[in-house]
Length: 231
Image 1 (cartoon, one colour):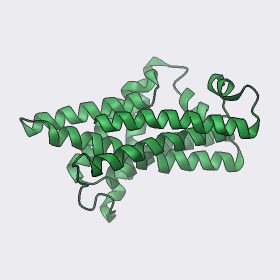
Image 2 (image 1 turned 180 degrees about the horizontal axis):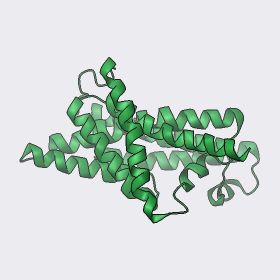
Image 3 (image 1 turned 45 degrees about the vertical axis):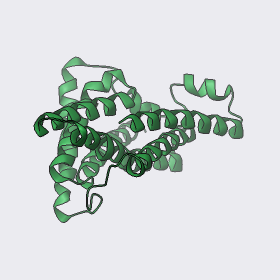
């Protein structure tokens, strides 16, 4: 769990370094500071930031397996035909969470998605869409469910049920906090808890990955539909 936290921090630092490098190469006016203050940063900055964070995640995963005495689940990345049902679960989870937020009429609820896609067009939009829909869930599932959840569930002494419950709460809370969006915290926590239960039930990461990717895909479709309506 500590390795995951350190990997996250290292990823944040690397993300800033990569964005700063991109700003220097592109001669972006104002450099890194201007990008950080922008409500619609350039798509390449978002992409480079994501890659930096995932490098930190990958380092944490590698350390957990090599030094943390955590063995991967057998066939954790092997798909099965029955896994298609988890795509439906992810889509349903997005609609349920959206419905839970609907009565509050939060105007800035879509800010994180707009922050990622607002300045992206053409190939840039396609790249960011690919990274956020398919690549992000891969690294996040491996770290938060494949490492952090399992480390707590399998390393907490006492009742197995209590250990799993603690692991669900801890991994879901860290998953939500890692996104850095206070308004979305409870929705992300609920999603993280659901994905942890899926991973624990199946002892694989493909089901939670598919649910996570389809959850993100619904948000992407909403962005595309919004753009189409304004074109």
